[in-house]
Length: 249
Picture 1 (cartoon, helix red, strand yellow):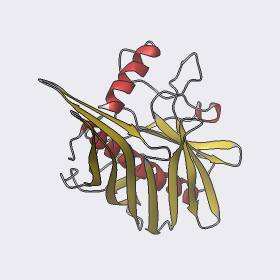
Picture 2: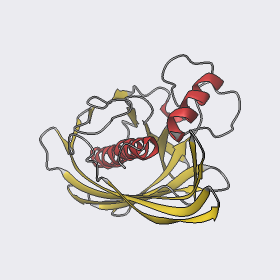
Picture 3: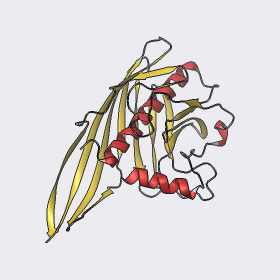
């Protein structure tokens, strides 16, 4: 369980005893957070809501949500090594106070180098993410039409990408630090922030039950666009939890 362990270590590093809070950009500090409802900290899948937005998705992740391929090759008497590819599809709708909604379809991909050593009575299994994975690609149609792609950078150990809605392009990057963290060393993915030019205009915290910040100075349409992208990232974080925990095997 890679993510839960890392999250626990990060919590201890920040001196926290509860679910940690991600580091918030200065531009968002004065903006009230919009708590996410309908999302469990670990099994966060289903109908989510925050502010004036509502989303709908399957009530739970089916056991076949993750599709896996890859083979193991014997590299020793009691050892196997191989590359495993994981892929999951996700569909959901987002609407605001009865207005026409946005239909979203996302594909999440993971790729891991896996090593298994067999011994009695314990079998040791190690999986290391291949650079550039995990990644998410989304297409949005309906009220908000666009696309979003996000993938990790090996050098910075952070995720970055773009959410495009017509001529509007939001930068997307992960927040890998905790509020009050003394160092800038990237820890786990605690959430994501959205930028327009060099200004942070929104963020979504995916740790715990989730929170969302959207700059009220943005137009109503821009706020809807960030709500759609934030919802996708909340579901994405939940899918990664399932993948890490092996629940969807």
